Image (cartoon, rainbow, N blue to C red; front, top):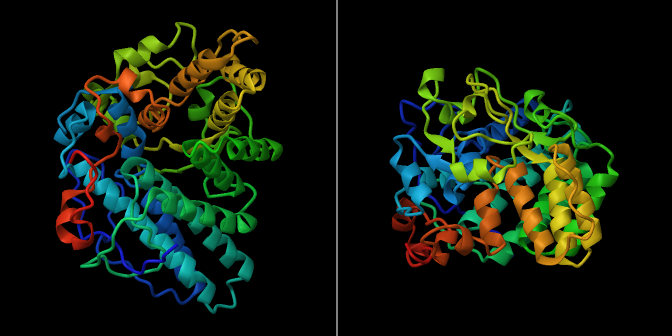
Amino acid sequence: MNKYKILLFSAFVLALTSCEQVLVQDPQSQVSTDVKDAATARAVMNGTYNGFQSADYLGTRYQLLPDLQGGNLRWTGTFGDFSEISNRSILTNNASVTNMWIRIYNTILRTNIVIKSIPLVQDGSFSDAEKNQIVAEARVMRALSYFNLVRWWGGVPVVTEPTASLDGLTVGRNTVAEVYKQIYTDLDAAFPNLLASNKGRVTKGSALALKCRAALYQKDYATVIAVASQIQALNQFALVTPFQSIFATQNTKESIWELNFETTNSNSLAFFLFSSSLGGRNEVRPSPTLTAAYSLTDTRRILTTSYDVQLKYYRINGTDFPIVFRYAEVLLNKAEALAETGKDADAVALVNQIRTRAGLTAAASTLAGQDLKDEIFLQRRLELALEGHYFFDLVRTGRAAKVLTNWNDNQALLPIPDREIKANPSIATQQNPGY
């Protein structure tokens, strides 16, 4: 794969509206590549984690917008860009789309600096083992960022060399296959040097969970099964009960990687969901169709009218810990791969672990074929609601046209931001279809 030394996007200072909580205010046009000692190296790595915490990335939008786009959430606020996403009538200058694109690439820029610069640091207090660990974490973070780009925009530029400035640099788009090749390259290179356990950082479990998720999107079911089995064999993770405890008690045994927030570095998840009477902005609310999908006894049930006291994001001070990967998803990934390869009985056994934890009766052991695949899809919707999966699950399983009104296949991808198309002659004719 070609290794590009130039980034796609123009310099841009993210404009956060006054009614949003400001999470991160770091420079958007330039990041220093001057890493000379251990203290600076560690600070750059912390800044890379901080990039994930942005409201325009895993701090709010990457959790909520896929469910808004897929219909698990409905728009009830005032942001016009959220209205476009809810209606899937997204314009090329949509602010959330633009800001997500730039924020993700800024995170990649940081990982590139870490990966290339850290091994060169000459500091007696900086061991090779620590250097290797930090570089490995950055590789997984870069892989996750490319995965998040490719599933929402399709083929995107693959940039692996560091650069300090985002100004005036241009490059064309790689193919989807090339993006996935880079994802797997980073994950495989990172794995040997990752920590075995740490809920708040990238670990071996994180790398495996991302590989399992990416393989599912590629319909590489043999890899999904093998990697999920590898995660199970670690004996580090388990479903916890009751369901609410996953979110009420942070960093539980079910979590593989959580983003840890504090009041001084908060997120906007509860703020966007809560009513104004409880200090929120009521920008999005769970949809009636989502609530109706749960049985009355399902302990995961998310209510349309009382989200303020419900389940996943409820700390209005912004200290909820969004879960990037958790064990339930791994089991559902494996169940889907087993069902797709005709191993129905094994798939049912995994689905029943999810159902039983939710307070539901076990599915019949004879469940098979399309009925089993539909059950797995339903359990993914109910289990992972508001965690940033639903729209992508609709698209990758071919269900979007059946579930979403006024659907056309061009809606499967977001537009390349208009400012990038205008600033970069290399992609002037490479906009996604339909925009």
